[in-house]
Picture 1 (cartoon, rainbow, N blue to C red):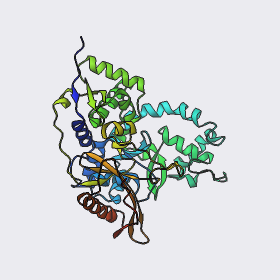
Picture 2 (cartoon, one colour):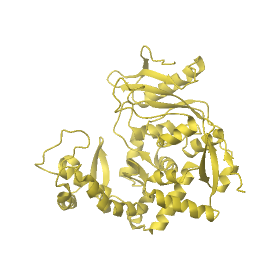
Picture 3 (tube, rainbow, N blue to C red):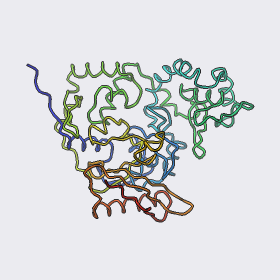
Picture 4 (spheres, rainbow, N blue to C red):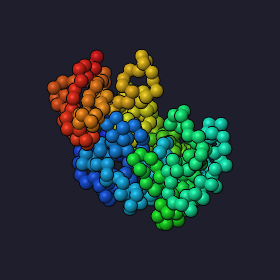
Length: 401
């Protein structure tokens, strides 16, 4: 007869998960220099996104954890100290440069895969531009996409309609020949990797098995508990089969143990954890209310957010009216260890106001006077962060059912 697996109840699981994501503590403390680098290393990566209704995603993610953070604090770590770098996890992300050596396997894997997947999607002939673009950077120094492909027709088909030399530039970045040396505004500027990534990081080399072990182990450190699929998806560095093999081997060796994690509805999911996690008593998060980025690492896996928090979440950018239930880009609201609602707000810097269009409380959550006061205090802080001097509550903002 098989023995019953240990169970991590839902409340403990939520607090453990939030603690691993630096969301179970008050968002105070040093927020620049080495302390900021350590925070990013703790949560693993920070997704970079262009949408700027209040502030860009990477800045919102860091502000949610350290409200003394200001966007200018990130630039020196990326562009001067080079303790961070920018590359791809599940999306474009800021990462500790210490992980660079493990990305070499991804670079090698992407060399053929990207050419194949981009053929027919990108404009014809992009792969013929690789050598010319690389030579231009080698001879002339850093370039942005506007400085390559002279004479090539620029696209009018949207964000991903790249001219061939722009696609070549992105490809060379994805396979490690180039690196992002800085951003001008939000525009990436690329240079040769050896002129951007420190020599010690470039010199690090790992066998594939070492990278699989590191990717799965470090993902489990940062998640607290996980399925093999969640371990594979965390960095986007190893495939599902490799993660399954790691789990089998780690369980057999007694490195990890299997357990069940209780969900919001009472359903359980089988996961693996480090044995010591079963005895851990995670901290109770402060009861303050905080605004999260839609791209927060804690919410990246929508199925996990629904299981743990009962929070059904998607960014409705591409959902047309009238099917759109919420605003097109809403901010999740975290209160203590619960996700309690969604916020639709926009910073109007010309009018110096953060305008609150709507707040949708989750089912069973009341917008009583205490919660409204906590929300108002948080939005005052958010307004200052966004460069606004007041919060305007638009008529009909309370969307309580």
